[in-house]
Length: 432
Image (cartoon, rainbow, N blue to C red; front, top):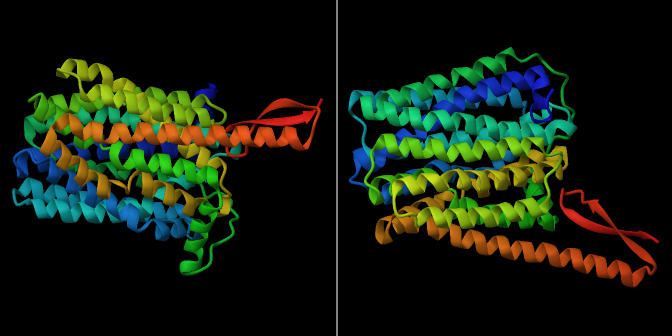
């Protein structure tokens, strides 16, 4: 099988990917409908309300990360995923009922977004680490890349379809389709063959197991560097649905269909980045840092585009750079973390990538409302670029210090390029 799609030779992974495409399509449709409902239907173009909704939906990921990671490492992951997917379907049905009945109010959206965030907080780390049970270790980077490809394939379809449905029928049918889309992963999880139990060392009960994840990350400078980078980018830079809604509707005066098209165009670059990532055997540090710098540059350029069509031209490059950054960082963390504690580490990672929007979402929305839609993007792209440069400088300095120390302590050595355990590029030395 082609190297890009080699994980699909595993039956259970094929099932997983099929269900994910269905569910992710509904999720993207729901995101567009939710932002449009809040910004254009329930308020008068309020970016602040949109930011609050985003923050409420992703805030629980930040607050519940230790518990979510502990659950991912301790309980059967397939059963846990079936429970979380069923809960999200129920919440989707509740939102659809409120909108279709005409009784929906802003506080309803706030409450359901918070509940969805709580369920997603438990679902995320389990979903990220569950793929390790479906493919052998050597195929894990490929499976992570294909997961992102699946997510962004749905992103190609979801926003555009949602925009067309909203323009024709309103947001209600979109929420209903999202709720029904969870039948996809529920069905495929049920069809998976019972695999041999994965032998994992269960974490201690209570807070001891949760604290172990924090101690593990604190003792790993390489993980701390990645967490710092994705924390800033995730908090202030990855608010695409909110910023795109502001730029499309407020700056350019476009309708829901144009908003959906912008999301689809962004996903073109993201899908390309995911497929490229799936071909890599192992991520490298220079890729993580380079992608972060590219993201900062392309996001800044998109913010200052003078018209809608030029804005669309830049969006694929923005999607490519952001997805490359996230996929490379995700694979680096998972590949360099012990399986017994991977769930807790990935929970912390996801709390930074997604949970930071509890602060970043309302702040970015307020900035866009107060100073202009373009500043909702610039307030994230500029700090992201500065942190990427700082992390790159620290990584390069560590490599040089390590190399100088090796030459001082052991003369007559030659430089040998090697790949570090965390997936980065380093230099080693050997006897000449």
